[in-house]
Length: 397
Image 1 (cartoon, one colour):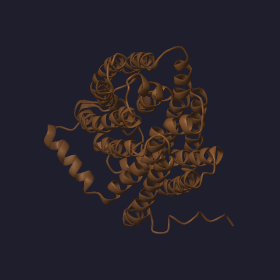
Image 2 (cartoon, one colour; image 1 turned 90 degrees about the vertical axis):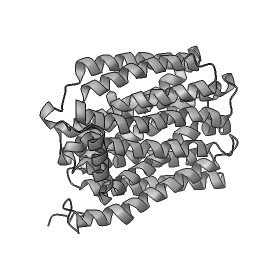
Image 3 (cartoon, rainbow, N blue to C red; image 1 turned 180 degrees about the horizontal axis):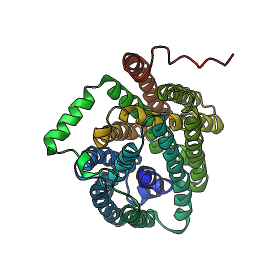
Image 4 (cartoon, helix red, strand yellow; image 1 turned 45 degrees about the vertical axis):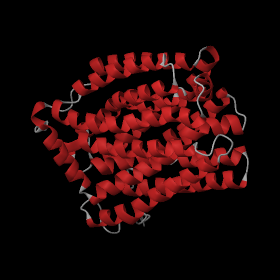
C-alpha cells in the first residue's frame, strides 16, 4: 500500500481537474501545475527520505511522512486559489515520497537477484490497482462532490496508510546495518552512485520512459474529455484500462524473469514503449481518431510494467547497503522527468493533442537511447551479464 502514494495522489482527482480549473479560475497550464508540483515533491522528497531511512531505519521517516501527507491533503481541500493549491501539492508530494522510497528500500532489504525482480513485479500488480481504481473512484466522487471533497478522501487515505505504517510495516534495517555520518555520508553515497555509469544510465532510461507516462497523465484529462468528448466517468475507465495493462505486463515480466535476464526484460519494455509513443504521435498528427489514440496509449503505458520492476532491480542490485539512497535517486529521476514534461503538454492550450504526442515520443526515444547506447555497453563490461546474454535463449535440442 505504501508504494501507492504516487498513483493515488496523482490520479484520484484527475477526472475533476477541468472542474478544478474552472472553480479556481485558472488556465489549463496552471491547473496542470498542481500535477507538476506533486511530481516535483515526490521526486525531491525521495532524495531526502531515502538517505534518512539508511541512517535512522525505515519506520521513523515513514511515520513522519505519513502524518504530514494526511495534513496537507486535508489542507488542499480548502485551498482558496490555484497558487495555494500548487504549494500544498508540493508539500503533499514531499511527504508522500517517504512511502514510495521506503517501500522499495524494504524490498531490497529483504530480497535480491531475480527474486527481487519478481517482488517488484508483484508490487506493480498492487500498484496497478491504484491507477485503475483511483480515476474510477474519482469519476464517481465527481458525481457527488467537488474536487475539494476528493482531497478530503485523500486525507482519509493518509489516515489508513498511517495505521498501516505504524502497525503493519516491520523494521527491516537493523541498527548494525544502518549508515552513520549524516550529510557527509549521504553525499558520499550519492557520489558513489552517480559515478556508476550503469546505474546512471538505468535511472535515466527509466526516468525518461516514465516521463512518457507522466505526459499522458498531465494531458489525457483535457485531450480525452475536451477534444474527444469523453465524460469524467468514461475517461476514468479509459485511464483504468491503461493501468490494467501495466499490471498485466508487470506479471508477464515476473514470469519472464525466470527465463530472461532483467536487462533483457527492460529492453523489451523500452522498445514497446517506443512503439506506443510513435503510434500516439502519428495518431495525433494525422488525426486518426479516438481508437488508434487509445490503442497507442495502451501500448506505451503498459510497457512500463516491464520497465519499472527491472530498472529498479538493476539500479539497486549492487548497493544493498545504500538501498535507500539508490532508491531515492531512482525515484528522483522518474518524478523529476515527469515534473519537467507535465507542463509542456499544456503549453499549446487545450485545443490540440499534438504536444502530448511529441513530448511522449521524445521521452521514449531518449529512454531507448540511454539504455541501448549507454546501459547495454556498461552491462557487457560488468560482472552482471556475459557479453552474449542479450541474445535470445536457444531452444532445447
